[in-house]
Length: 451
Image (cartoon, rainbow, N blue to C red; front, side, top):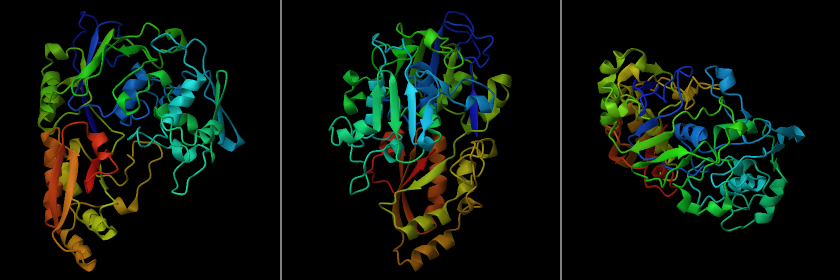
């Protein structure tokens, strides 16, 4: 579950709250503050992979060929509509070929036109897996690029240009029309474009490779004022070269004059500011959920408080390069799901999951192996390790988001049961940019928390 809380005052100009959920009463103007406890891992469109950040950037700085509209109707909200493209695409060859035409008059923040070649270049960056790390890379297995002996694409991205000719055959430009050629049918390709920034355009002259991770070159209604500080955030102001006539209020209402991303306050401080309706939080929202110790206060705030079904699931990812199958099986047997839920605040915050896909997400199917994990079974875990001839206690390092006391308590609950099950657990709490650290393929962690 996700527990959301909003402040209820006006903007800095005394007008209506630009962050209000009431679309009818919201007015343009003022400053919206977005409070976050931890740094964002990526601003680079090809590397952004956290759902919250994908959505925020989609509404502010990054436009796509097609995107999802703003709607309370679930079917409408998950049906792609044209954005930078003139329509939602045309497919041929059973979905193996997709074609889109880029709108006339759409521009980057410097006033230059967004071209077909910008889209092609953006897609090329996904293949530079040694540089553009941590982002979604579904394109690698779909795009009609030959495969090398090790199973990877022969094309290695725009920085090395190895295999460039293979890539140039797979994505082609004819004036404003871009055509994608895939190895296999991709019938829901527009959904992938709308859900991720993997296929976003990227202006080649702005690319500093890995140095672009926190750069933002906008084609949306806002642009970055100055630079982004990884640990403090940044400020977005209106982009003078954004033309709302090429867009729709069903996609981007762009009401605030300014959006300040304030990073670094503790989750506790953020909860205090919003619950107390402090002056600095009068036009503020947060990407952090309510902490368990604040739930009683929050529940008494009327329509400022809402507890909704989250699309996400907390799960544990073992490092299969470091842990053998019997060790992974024993860890699963010993995992105390009930302890995690209790430490996280109980049933107001969590329900047991039987898939890493949340039941609130279309396409959900339960997974038999995840059912009824309960409090874990230390004796069964020890037997698995013993039968495999594994010496106990077996050392493991658990990496998790340690930005709040709640996260630390959840990790401690797991460690307690694992330690009783033949393991010796080292807890590794991360308080900085979480995902870039755990996405490192050379990570020394044995098991990590994911969401």
